[in-house]
Length: 501
Image 1 (cartoon, rainbow, N blue to C red):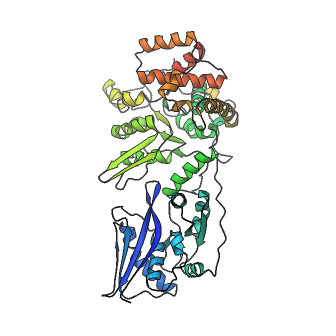
Image 2: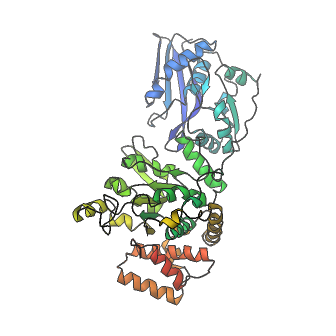
Image 3: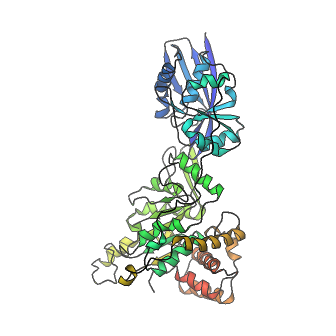
């Protein structure tokens, strides 16, 4: 044997999507060596030792020749250990230990253990979808990833537990069972946090309901212990369940980030990063770019507690994603666009000590208060629909009966969302209305006059004007009204006030 070239098909993750990779293995005479080229990362370069041990421990012979594994296209950066199985298969073909057979119609994905067993890898759902779109007949995945890959549909999924099963598969002597698609939870499991835990706080409960009904962003300002964090954690319980297509989007993102199947997963995501998070951690970044908390919260809730403790540049990174629903990350030689259609819910204290300037026990200097509140810029605050100021609940409210349960509120929210989908299209809500759609809202004369007066008196921006209209439309949807009346417009304007009046 002078030189033998063999190929295999696999994929690499690129953000939350998958890109095809052709593995070319050349075995020729020379001093024994094993090189992996084609911009592999550190985990992929170490595939040499994993493949060597896996072949030996599965009864195959590792050729003592010069071996070069090329990952094409060479200009694409390859990440992760998911190409181990494809490299091993191409090497077995090149060394005449595996018949070419039907391998060309297969895509192979999996990480090899030293004993030859095949370990699960992240992003298999995106990889299976990419393979289906390329017309690949079947995809070979680790057994643990089989139910996930089956979600892609219209492509045969073959599950392997060890490298030794590959020869029986290619030889036609063994046919593995087809895995069943894993179930996708469209709503959160029963028994979770319930809105009935929030005692009193009538204004806050109504603000939560309006925000959930229209998918609006929300800021709660009040002293510590008033119920801000408790209310935010109960918000997912009043949101309607995910549609099947939305659940698949959420699963694809979780799979690419290695979070699919985590404990507590199901329904709409709820992400609550610490205030020390970096801009890259919040909206994504790195080289190659990776998803951040904003993308992980796609179709769910992104909760920022202690908002004024976040770095200002971190908060400013949210401005464009809040408008577009996408995060665009540009790096030298690469550009990624990641989805991030989430509900932003934030909580903040009125001043550094938390009591507020109106409290006689507050000792914060006016300059310290201004610096504290300046962490939230006017441009970002303008993009937040609901600004709810809250006070401590009274002793009677704290010791009183439970509030309205989540199931009852969720019923009203779901009805409002159904009206919005009938008007805007499947999966869309009022917070996503375009400027043209906002202008088509049915305004009664009294509502139009009230909005015009507020626009001039409060000096609203053009963006704030449109957001008030979206909010008023949600209030009208909750009330079952076909048009926006003066009462609904007044409630929408009230929901954008930071004071408690």
